[in-house]
Length: 116
Length: 112
Image (cartoon, rainbow over all chains, first blue to last red; front, side):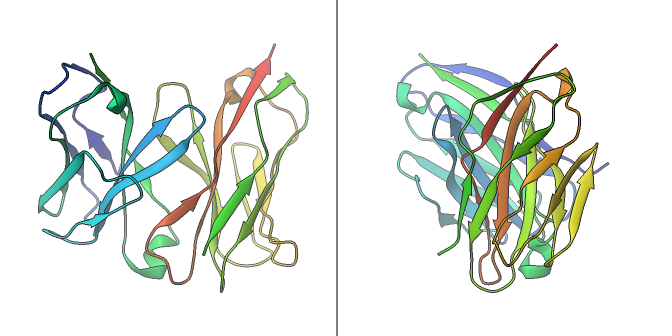
């Protein structure tokens, strides 16, 4: 069964810490995405990547960075965690191109991050 | 640009009731349309999809028909169960886009 795996389901970090959220997919997908989900705000795109070492800003990139050194792995980095980054973080992947997107995304199970 | 408008929630139904969650979209060209479901504490799972006009996607008793003339993709189920309680997201992939566009999600609660 194809999978997107997020390294942690629950994470508690302190304000000011550098936080790494890891996402690995085993489907050889070109595209990978990071979203955050907050009550009443739906899904908001943070960053995405269409290829190794490529990254593009989404709608809310401030306070975040990403790394994609290998095709299967896409990391989200909170440079200095703040309480307003407490959220559910969702990773997703997809094939590229119009035909690829026609299959939709595969999502990971999410990481619920609490910053105290 | 592309957009998806979903029925406002939350929606509360009794078990065995009929479900409709409305979804309309704006997109150029011929998008593919999706419904995702998110159970409590989980990520999103693809529920069903349709890639061209008049296609009907179906899965687990849920159905949605791609209606180009009304730019709609409403989700329906004839008899809901308590286990269907979840958040449902409508989404589209536009012909020139490289990402999915999501609706805001509709919370469904089914009471026994």
